[in-house]
Image (cartoon, rainbow, N blue to C red):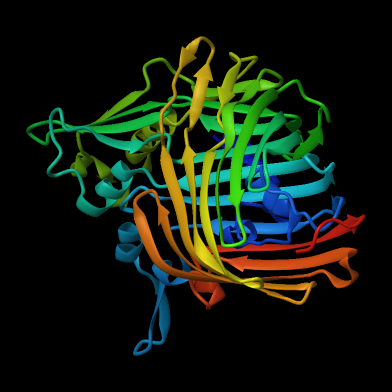
Length: 474
């Protein structure tokens, strides 16, 4: 069990390392910008027309979506002057099966060239997806116990909602064409390179209570895919764990596509796109499977004979040790090298937008962003596609362009996280483009709480773009 914990810890550490660099989950404020060329990443039909070419330098972006905040976990008792964990609030926050989601993106380089009737874009990025959730069955068991669940009413304590992590690179080539003065369409192909994946391939832990409450039976099936370009080893003499890069170019390849359209006049514009449409990543290199150590991995508990616990006035630990050993054996696992190749899907995104141009410098409208997290796609020859999550952001946007080099965007968004609604989340952003040669931008979106420790949602982007050549006016 210790080795599994180390593997999981190293995986989470890699996620944390990536997060300290950059993160990028889409901001509706960026999508609503008229001057930032990186809005093209959300819709390949978008291209700013005020420059013939742009170069996007490494940008910083951080995204968090969580059902829990500090106040959901801790409460302060002013009478006793102590802080305590509020278990009821935690259970209420997790009761809908929401996941904590962390998205990261290192936009290493981006290039766009406008040829008049059509344009090309190139980009190279590193991305991290991480999700952690509490299975509904476990929440039910902690909150209600097993009294009302007997016989065929099995409590599922572990399911695929528990954890998933993925680190991968993305190289993209995009193409857009202006069909007329108003309509632009675009498409992009993405080549994916997988570096790390930890995903559930059928793990489960169930609890069954006998109809007469005479016994409890736990059945555990541990089955997880673990693929990494980083080898984790443990020195048996010092018990120290180390991680080394096995290869910088793994054979875990994949492909996805983006499609988009935009119709814009002097009075209004509408747009739509679908991003990351495709099978995702095919994991073939460095595959390991973490599985249960025993074929018969069940344990039946019929109670404890209290008279046997005390022997001669002292606690007989050897008797209780039998119970501890049985539970420990239930969680025993083994690592199998060279498991079957499998696919994992990248969450597919849908974007819809409409903006009304009130004056040449002032616009307002509505934007919608939705994500479908499809989970595991294929293991060997067996398809296991299922929708495991849906997340959306609907934003009212106001945009003001001041002269030719300042843009300010503000928003108010309604968020959903797997059925949970968050009704008011403001956002603010600006772009500065002095001398039409370079651009500094910052966007802070989906602010669920102005107290940082109580924030459940937040998206932050900061970056720099360079422009070359003159195009049409803003």
